[in-house]
Image 1 (spheres, rainbow, N blue to C red):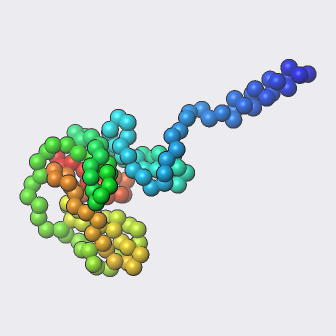
Image 2: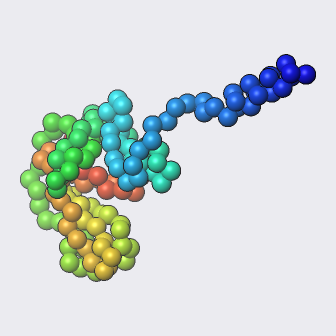
Image 3: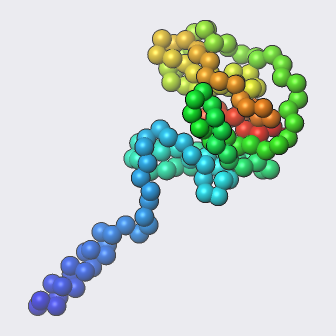
Length: 142
């Protein structure tokens, strides 16, 4: 009987053990995948989740942006001359607080809690704003 009880305890502990060890993280943080082929975000369960892969010919790299190091999909391609920014501009009204959007092809803006668009920052040289799974990122220009 004690052998059956020991076997049951062993079976239960094997089932309860996680099959893969997942790295915990801080909600809202971003990082490059390993290898640097995409961008991940720490979700509400404090687990890393893929935001999206980097476009072909680019790799994820942490770059300084507004006092922080943030992941961007980059390469060394040259950017054509930057021109006007179509669409709504910072200071205009917006519908969804917390929603980030491209501000033209070379910058990012966010809708604040007062439903007003606020400038977040320009994309680094040789990059442009592009949506990855509905979220704007600065990615390498091809």
